[in-house]
Amino acid sequence: IYILYADKVDYNQFLQTGYAYGNVEIFSKKDSITIFGQEARYKGGAKSTTKVFPDALMRSISGGDTLYLTGDTLYVINDTVATPKQQKMFAYHKVKVFNKTLQAICDSLIYDMTDTCITFYVDPVLWNGKNQMRGDTIKVYSKNKKVDRILLRTKSFSISRDTLDNFNQVKGLSLIHI
Image 1 (tube, helix red, strand yellow):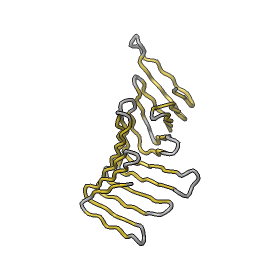
Image 2: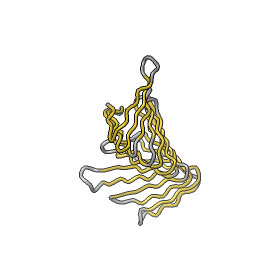
Image 3: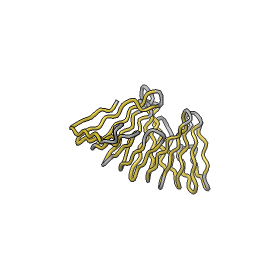
Image 4: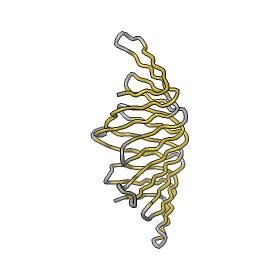
């Protein structure tokens, strides 16, 4: 069940298309996710899409922590035809992600909600505790709604502060943080 608030909403039930603008707020009760923006476009059907722009913000509340994701545009695809069903969110241009354990910036990302993997593209930088990570592409895998492992691909670099306040640095073609 989704709840939509906006200053103005136009919806064509026959075509299953909708447009909302002005203080748009979309709430998914099942996922505890709210998306905010100034405009939204919806196309229904077996492969429904929702596009929220500009200056979109997603807030996901889970187990006492809140994940925030911002970007110029958020684009969600919900494919009920695929087996298993697939749901993906694309965020692009000036993307920022933050919660208690992870902060990140990049140009764009894909969040595969089915397998809980977030892939960061174009100059991504992640901070996790006392670690800072860079790579051409970074994948963050979750398990039980917590970071399970991080894969840095191509031109990977990681720096962390140890208990003596020294900095440990690792550079390589690919790195895996567990």
